[in-house]
Length: 423
Image (tube, rainbow, N blue to C red; front, top):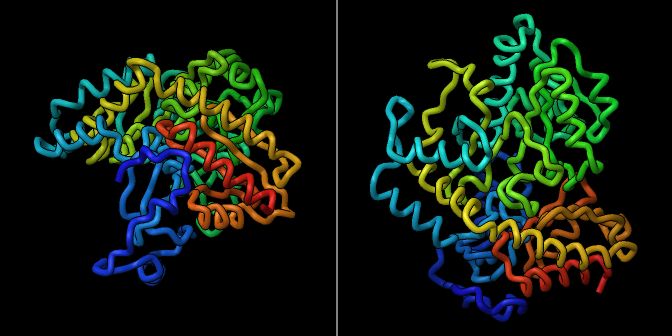
């Protein structure tokens, strides 16, 4: 299916119901409900095909994707250059383990290192793995370089954080749903208010090895810290010989209009944590990037991953890096379309919307409780063939693929306007 009919109602482009399809939407949902652990509460949409910013379900209905896999699909569904890189590598070799080196590995690490401006890269798979890697590296750096006494390292984290769902990570979350029932938790984390430099400064001790933060809290509702906050964090870290570790898994790789969200304040962290869009929406790829003085503390046998940095992941990741590094087109699109989105969303404030936060092509929208919950709004959008995701009850997030056309973006925002205004 092509996507050249931009800005039009997708219901006019539905495909005829396929009577030979083995399972339709309600049957697929029933099967998933019966045989899957209930750790998600998805909207009742069963996707069978996707291209660009559009998805088609098993019953032939088209939906505009305004979530993009939480930024994993920054380049849209099935980007030709990414598919080509994957197909070519599939015919060669897909896995060797790190017991051997393959011909994509060194180039991927070098090219990602150049993109981040860092000496070394350590590839992993999921975002949570990369966060765990950054935690281990920060502690080891603290013991070997800073001289913190063994087993006493502390990492300062932020209120409202979301870095994944491993037992260590949820241990320093303040989200009850993510945390409750999964203890006991690892010690060594100190939580301060996000955006409060005085609180951060007060929490630093001789045992502090790192400050771990998201430059924008995506899961929290696209929460943007006060102007100057990231620069202040950088200054505090420099003053106290503490690593600044930036989780750019959702915010990075073009989403905010910059390659990295920290660039909005001219800040370079000591450690980048990357993921999601690094895999092009095709394979899970994550990594941390840091200079040799930090990442060089690791030695053989101290950390690893069978699939981390596999040939297929590296081939796709190299193409992602190339797409971001060459022309800047995706960053420019995020900026330009983000302004279009901001202008349209700000008109909704006071008309079903309480507040909006926009950075690049990424928005958090606080829904007036009189309209309903975030889930209610997302279900109403789904009925209008727009897919979005709620968070924390009354907020929805919009993160369309960076390849979305302006016409399709405006059409999707029109649907939101009609939902929240009760039209």
